[in-house]
Picture 1 (cartoon, rainbow, N blue to C red):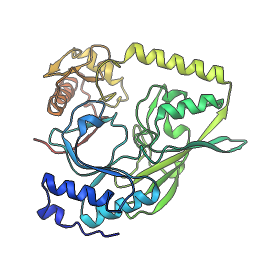
Picture 2: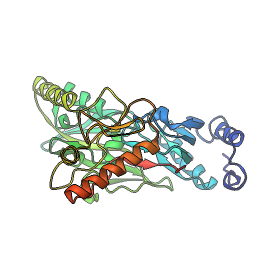
Picture 3: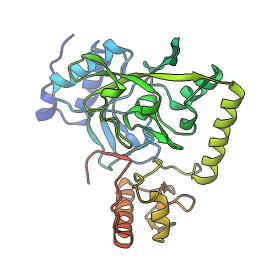
Picture 4: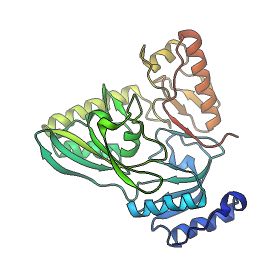
Length: 325
């Protein structure tokens, strides 16, 4: 393998050069997975907005990922992990560096052990939370019902400590498998994780490979009934018919963010084609031609109004990446 791409930053920023580098990384044998160049992030995010990322890489396995991180380090390229893009807003000028997507090589979900504490399920980061929920009820395992209807990948759910209905990922996780920027793999016990509300305290340079979950034996029909109940509640309250990235703001202690936004009279407010959802005020939806700039401007207006009228400064829950115009 040859890692000799340091010229990227100083002399290789153009479209043609990125094309050559992408071909070198994939076809040239640095990794076996596919590497794309100048990829519009609107195609990979649920908001359906965002400029291009220089490179989008799909490592095939752990060794591939390690080689990819080595290449990023040698080429002096920043990288970030792209899950299913359901909690991500990419700015209109896009992202410099490499987006790493694990959806093509890290999709195993399997029950690996059972004892008096429950059944241990290994779920790799590239698979979806939806499939983990489905796997659980089909195997008569309870504990993951709260995640029904939460979009995104297992890795993204772990990173964000995703939760609903008073349950979070930390409540069912035993440990997290991580790779650092040097390609070293370690397993972090949940009690050693610096988790908090909507965060597992994982550094952005660390790549989540998967997690071990402890689930309990239950009755499949009861588990499925609870999942269906949760899905019905989500469909009633949330705007699934329009592009969004889920909850825009974290819920403060005093009251849910959606309630505060609605009480401030902001439902239906627009900036361009970005709109505060009329169905759930903590969602911003794309009516068709919104830009990232529209969404960010609208979010800031919401924060300012709520702070002025309620005395509470809302904190963003969605992740923001990329360059401003």
